Length: 148
Image 1 (cartoon, rainbow, N blue to C red):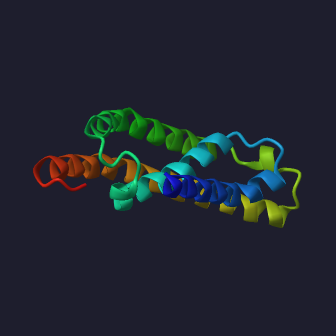
Image 2 (tube, helix red, strand yellow; image 1 turned 30 degrees about the horizontal axis):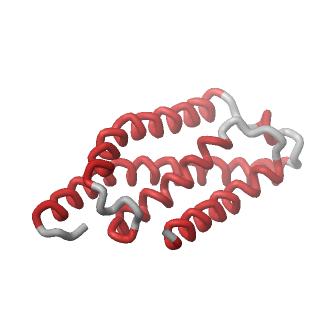
Image 3 (cartoon, rainbow, N blue to C red; image 1 turned 45 degrees about the vertical axis):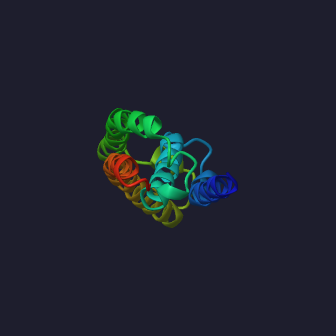
């Protein structure tokens, strides 16, 4: 239980560190919530991919089975939100949120936002795709070998 709390605090700290430059430079950023979801999803699911046996729900078979089926709509949600962001970048720019900044700082922050949302978005989709297979492997191991 303590390890899980520590990991959630680490995840929260990383989310705050990644979003801090955006929050500092803008008053309103339309993709702030999904950005935080991407960062938290990537860290949490990557942790469960590699450290499932140390998690709280590593031994709960039915919960893992439910998570396998819930991951399908979650993957589509993540992909859809990334598609919306990419469409926003194609049709509009981030100038509405960053227009008050000097041009060099605006270009730098725009590159940062684009890079980190795409990185964490794609990373969270990849980990969300791999997690059901890891959970299925864990269910099989627990049923046949008694390990997670």
